[in-house]
Length: 159
Image 1 (cartoon, rainbow, N blue to C red):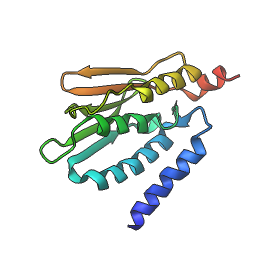
Image 2: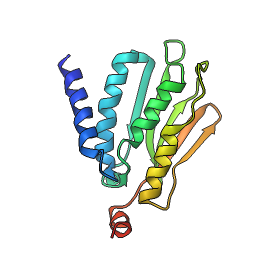
Image 3: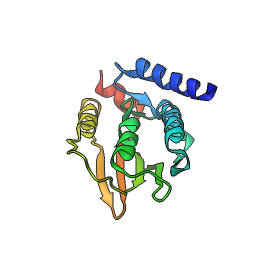
Image 4: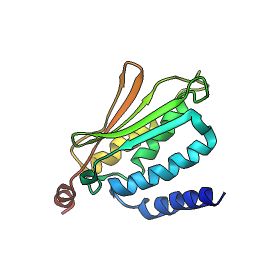
């Protein structure tokens, strides 16, 4: 119970600290992501697993805050997550992109999704970079590629 409270507090604090910020470091986003996924694992148990494999030299690169949360929420919102069909999420780098990949096992839709989260993410990127996120389906996987911004490039854009 104490770890749940600690992780929930970490999430809440991060949201409050970054809500008005255009960018966050990969390091801070990954700390938030670990807390968020901890809470999701309480909900789904062993039916949700994840791996994060980002080299240390990528941790100071930048991206819009809460970018990963949008994609992780979509993964659980649009896919079946149960013992027969566990959801597997991988987070890794591919060049100067942060890649979020999950297996596809679609829920029977109860409504039409209008993709506001992804549209919002693309718009937030347009404010800080000339590069756009890439969203695609590869065989049985959904893949999102988020451009990572070098701090010196962000400084140049904002000055």
